[in-house]
Image (cartoon, helix red, strand yellow):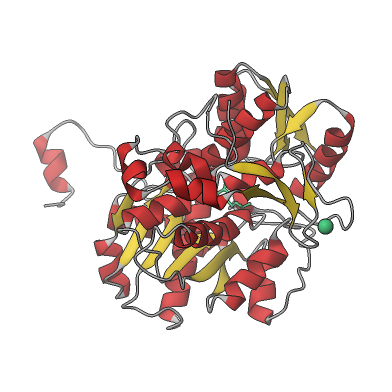
Length: 413
Ligand SMILES: *Cc1c(COP(=O)(O)O)cnc(C)c1O
Ligand SMILES: [Zn+2]
């Protein structure tokens, strides 16, 4: 099968080029590697006309992905972009949009995009087993898509994840291992496993390929806005990869002449205050990411204390004219409820972080109210119901006798 448009790997620091290989970092300086494309070859094929002829999922931009032939996640991506009129009215933003990856298939988070690419790549490299270090959503997606591709999967998570994330991993027949530690301990162990064993760890030795899948969210947003990059994007950050890839997506579309406007998007990063290594750096105006040793937040899916792409994410937010902020657990729950009550969309805790951070930035007057702003909502609320099931968060529903009198006694309407 041809991968004619993706032609190898290149170090993001020193530019050293590498042939396609399951390697994670540059041999010279240990900096991350990035997939290189032959943009002239891409430009010949990937016109607006060609894109719109294809099915509405992430593979319609396949020439800008490291793999063109999926072996799983055939319908991944193609999620809705809503004009969030109710939430926009509430906060005074008439041009507010919500990109909702809470309905991404197969496992209801944006991680399905990165996994679809990395599973295809794992198959090409001949791995029979794939794995990941995960905060939850990645575990679900690797388990599901490995099953679909006929690969075995071994998945490592911190022991304190939500029950739904555990069930949604094991049901696919994955081997799940809980680590007595935080995500950074899990990740360190996975790096050692990747050096030693014949396992394609999607976010370690396949990370360069994996990360490219995130671009599809940016391609879709630009296409759905009428081939325009938005003025502002608000996105929650874990390792800081997605936010960088959204920027790359807009720039690639511009380079290929697919956009109506010059992309001048301001990026706004969102984190939980209980694990805020990137937003702390942004707010302090520095590049220096100080790892958080003991993450403590209900937003477990983004609780990464030592983010792999934190430096690049913090630079992007500062250099693009955007910024960032972080929010408490109470604000996260309020953010989840605000999106549900205004737009009828139920997101997980990570999405609550995005909404609550946007509200905070909006109320502080940091984002221009008339510009186009897209909130990237990356996950599904049904997976983190634990946070809302704590006593006192949602009201107790009254139990009444099945009579009209009893209903009338409630004096509802
Ligand atoms: C993994 C994840 C993110 C962020 O991912 P990074 O690319 O590591 O910053 C955001 N939202 C959800 C729901 C996730 O699972
Ligand atoms: Zn290098």
